[in-house]
Image: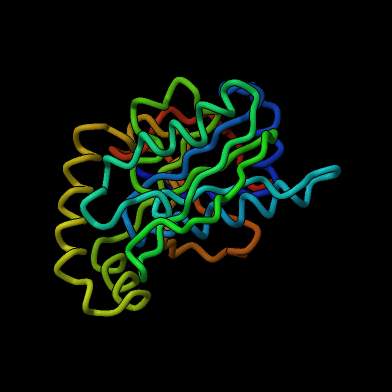
Amino acid sequence: MTVAVVEAYAGLARRLLARPARLGRTRLVAVDGPSGAGKSVFATRLADALAALPGGAPPPVVHTDDLLDGWDDQFTFWHRLEECVLAPLRAGRPGAYHRYSWVRRAFLPRAVPVPVAPVLLVEGVSAARAAVRPELSLAVYVTAPARLRLSRALRRDGPAILPELRRWHAGEREHFAADATAAHADLVVDGAPALPHDARHYFVQRVGGATSGALAWPGTAG
C-alpha cells in the first residue's frame, strides 16, 4: 500500500543541512527519475527553500542534460560530471563544466562555475546512480505516469523529438530496473499528485509500495 504524505520543502531543507557532508565539505543531493516527471521543478523549489533559510544562499544546481554530448550520451556523460564537478568538490576545490547546446550541438566555450557550497543539487536521469550513492546526503526519485511524462516532454520540446524520446524512455526503463534507483532513494516524490497542496512550498511523498526506498525523512509538513 502506498500512502501520500505532504511535506514542506523548508522542512526538508532544514533536515538536509543537519545531515553530514559526504562529498568533501558538500552535501550532495541527487534528484533522479524519468524524463518529464518533475525533477527540475523539485530541484528548483528545494534550492529556493535552502536559500530562504536564515543565513542561507542559493545552492549550485547542475542539470545532467547540460553535460550530455547529444542524445547518444544518455548515460555515458558521467565522466564529465566526475572530472569537472565531483572530483574538485571532493578535494575541497571549486569545479566548472561546459554546458552542451542542444541548438548548436556542441559544448559552449564559457565554463559554468560550481563553487564549494554546503549543498550541491545534481538533477537529471541517473543522477542517483549506484556509483555515487556512498557520497549522497539525499537521493530523491521523482515519478509520474508515463503518458503524462510523454505529453510534458512533447509540449516542452515539440513533436519532432518523438523518435529520440521513445528511444530515451526505453533506455531509462532499462537503467532504472538494473540500478534499482527508486528502491535506494531516500524520498520517492509524486511528480503528478492528485492530493491538494501548495505546490510552491510543499511536495507529495509516496510512502510504501514497491517504489518506496529507505525513508530517511520521517514526518509530514513542517
